[in-house]
Length: 415
Ligand SMILES: *Cc1c(COP(=O)(O)O)cnc(C)c1O
Image 1 (cartoon, rainbow, N blue to C red):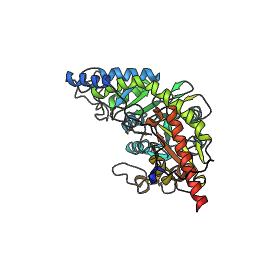
Image 2 (spheres, protein in one colour):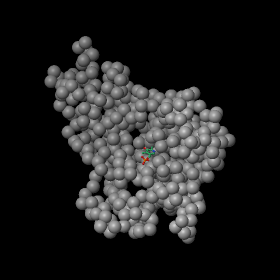
Image 3 (tube, rainbow, N blue to C red):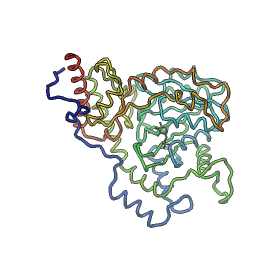
Image 4 (tube, rainbow, N blue to C red):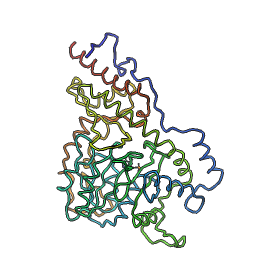
């Protein structure tokens, strides 16, 4: 470890930033603008009665994922909800979810009057730990919702094997995972259904939006009806067969997504390559441990690049301070979720409102040690748009971490 020079100061204390690159997001050009402008001029903005840009995008996205069907909708929460309801869950059914994910993965379960059951994550991947599934399954369990967290494929072989053994449906939450792969299959195409978000931070975006893919014709027909106020093909405009709502996207979103999809493969390739390189660079830093990519062939799409932080090697400064320092050095990063989901007031205080959740449900006793440690002490997230930078940018991220470590160590020596 080289000694800090007297000139070296943290950017947070007015020193020079290590990272010089900038990381724009979203990325677009005149073709995106033209596609949206053309829809505006056509006057055919809506769905489903005018134009066919939405059906065309759904076909393209399904083909890209190697799935038979796709149903677009207003966001990646509703897409999960459509899939769950189409699976035929009843009030009181249990649905297994990880605690280290965005709230939607669990809140859509409540919205179906079902009970989210939290199963801890694997410490090396931060994905649902398949070895803990069996113990969580009861006679009420119907569905497992694994999240390909950060864009890293879950251990789908293990999850599907448990699911088959208990006749459970598997809905992949692929909100982080557009273009990611597991053993040559696109994430989202492996379970019964796969749900994606097009919210502005996601790897494929139209500001807001979502889509759910499936190979199951029955699920497709139900989801297609639910997102279109319960209408059915062949029915009349005011015939409503199912308890759906208007969850449709606009043609403006569909043409923008069609343009954005053209970039997805190349962007995913870049993020994956940068992630592999950053893994190498960070492996050399004492106290920084990149997450494992698992043991099978994957393509990681790095919605987040996550590493584990050990404060003992950084002068005992808490993760939050470290992340402030790293941000100041120019690395687009975050401490991530402050708590596992079951610690949210929604669950702790049983704020179920109109939803019918059984009295036996009590989240104050839930304890997922790995997820808690990830939230409070360990996990540092670098955002996906930063992973679209150059190899030199990756080197500068590693150097920013080394600089912080160097200065903290020399401060300790000088105390
Ligand atoms: C973003 C996200 C969602 C929800 O998507 P929205 O489009 O914001 O509704 C669901 N699950 C995960 C893991 C997410 O990150």
